Amino acid sequence: MSVALLLAQTAATLFMAGVIWIVQTVHYPLFAGVGRDEFREYAQGHQRRITPVVGIAMPVEAVTAVLLLHFTPAGVDRSLLVVGAILLLPIWLSTALLQVPAHRRLSAGYDDRAASKLVLTNWLRTSLWSVRSVLILVVLAQAIDA
Image 1 (cartoon, rainbow, N blue to C red):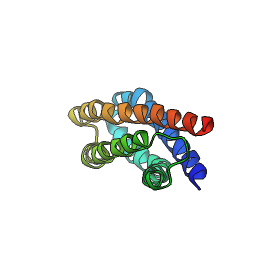
Image 2: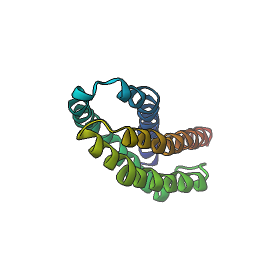
Image 3: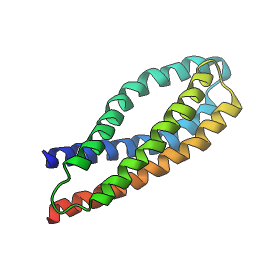
Image 4: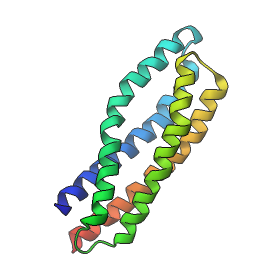
């Protein structure tokens, strides 16, 4: 069971890191290039399309992070799993308290301040998912070596 959890955790974390880097460095910067008249529809389309993408991976990542604390694979430094699980808290809080409200504001129409705040605050999630990716790859290597 612990191997399956570890593989699911690795896949979900790496998937989310890839998604967040593309969104942060490609998608969000392009917001400013969408015409103001078209932006509302564009922003609503973004929300409609991105929700199922992250709506599966984020819960899988969170559930497997918690389960791995109980079903830690042999040879794995559990403290790395603890740190990784703790890093999910600011990711989820940032999503709920910063990114989702910014997207709601933008779905009403383009707003320079909301777009800038979204890009700036999203660096927190981008950084944390990057750190989580390194941690889970180290954990995976430990499990393979065990």
